[in-house]
Structures are given as C-alpha cells and as structure tokens.
Length: 396
Image (cartoon, rainbow, N blue to C red):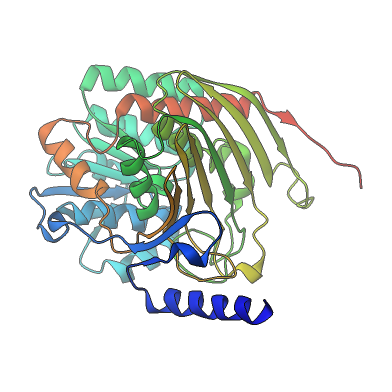
C-alpha cells in the first residue's frame, strides 16, 4: 500500500508538471472521475481592438494604476497625459511611460477636451471628487477601488451620473482582471453548478511585499495607508473587491450587511489601522461571507492567497487566484465539482475581456464591461459595512 501511494503521487506530479490536457483514470481515485484541463483562448483573443479612445491619468497614489492602464490599452485606449501628486510615484510612472505628457495640475487633465476617459488611483477619499469633476466636464471615469468612501460622495456620484449620462466605473480587479474569476463567471452563467446559494471570499493581503508587482506594497506604505479616513477602512477598501464578487456571482440586485466587524490585532504603532475584518451579506438571490486581513506571511511567496468559493445547488467552484499554496506558484486555478466529476481548470491562457468591453462601452454608451448599478451597490454596501462595523478587541 505504501508503494502504491508513492507511485500515485509520482504519477500526479508528472501529470502536473507536463501541463497536459488529460483525464485521469477513474480507477486511480476512490469515488469520482477527475479531469485536468487547460482552458484555451477562443478566436476572439487574437482580435485587434475594435475601437480607439484617448485617456489620461489624474492621480497615481496606488500602484494599481498600472494595471488599470494596461486594461484600457488592451481595449484600444491611447494614454496621452498624466498628473501625479507624489514624486516617487511620478518618477516610476515616467520610466514606464516615457512618451506620455506629464502635466502640472489636475485641472489640465479635467479640462482637456481631447480625452474621453480619466483614470485615477489617487488617495481613496479623493477619488470621488475627481470622478465627479471629470463627468461634469464630459468624460467617463475609471477609479481604483474603493471608488468612494462616504455615502455623501456616493449620492453625489449617482446624481452626477443621472445629470451627465457618463460612466463612473470602479476597477474591482480581483474579478475583472483575474482570469480564473472571469472563467468562474462564465461557468456560473452557463448553469454549471446550478443556482448559486453562497459565496465565500478569503482575501488575505501583505503590508510590505517583497515580491514586486503592482499590488502596492513593494516599497513600503505611505502615511495615508494607515488612516481609515483616507483609505476607507479595511471593509470599504479591500472588501469592495469581495462584495462586487458576491453581487456578481449570486446575481443579487438588492442586499444588506447582516453583520460586520473590524479589529487592529497587531499594529499598535498605527492605532487607527484595521488589520482584520469580516462581514456577512444577505442578498435577494444569495448570501455571502467575506474575510479580510493584512497577515500574509513572507513564506507564501506572493502578496496573498486569495480564495473564492461559490456554492450552487448542483455543485461548487473554488478559485485559487494567485497561488496554489505548497503545490505551485501558478495562479488562476479553478476547481469545479458537479454531480458527475471533479475538474481542475488552468485558466492562465484565457483572455481578459474587461478592457475591450469597457472601451466599447465608452464608444457605444453601453454597460457590458460593468453594470453601473451593481458597481455602485457594491460601493454602498462596503461603506455601510465599515460605518456600522463592531470594533473587536482581544485580550493579550
């Protein structure tokens, strides 16, 4: 029996490293058929962007701006100008985009009639005012998350949308820019696991990241990161990703926060910071649970082991977004179990549709890339979760 186990593990390791599209024999496992597959891009993946627009950046406080720029460029956007308020961020930006015009004031971006879209990852509580000004000057707007941090600003955003008919989009990148999360949405919409009952999101993050990338912490954190008035608080900030997913996968058009709590467990030097939070959501088409924290250990090898679980009446999906811990450093891992079999789907070769869809929305005045109502409902829910959260303290 011991040798059989070793042979089986060796066989599985060989299959995994080969990256083959294969069905493992049912006899190798007790009780179910298991399929490993690599999802390939469709013909549309090689299609050149259908549209072209000019866009500009107004604020680059968070490094997420680079991913946002990349998405719009994939859709046919041409970056023509930028403003930034932090010299270190501006220096990095100039190296990455040496041909882009750098302007001295926000007004030069907002007032430029040649641009159709403004992007911003300015300090979180300043994003709404930039977006409102942009819409009033005839431009659509794409904000880093959170797109808004107060109910008063949210009301003004909705009012301005109604008046101008412009788009106020929020880059919930953990769904829109994660290939396995996109694939999960396609499977849910195709009925692969029946009707969705619940989503569970586990969203650990790392304060100081030693592995680079555009997640924001490779160079340490700025002062505003520690101030909940500026960054919105843990539920409003990183929780916005997760509530967007809850609404999208359950299809809920109405929802409430059943319970929420926050804590500063291990950062006494920053007494207003929140390093842990969670919330329970109740929607008209499903329920959800979200856990957030800033405790990713260095040994993981990336900034967070983000997980998504989608429970349906006919099966379930798990997405291991950024790493398959202790197995592989590869992200975009999707697992699906239904009444017939268990499937592993490597989603790394799939295209990301948000950029092309969003540029098309700007040209055609549609909302295919992101539903405007759902986008702002997610923002509203996390603001309320943050505002009404119970503050938890632990005894030493």
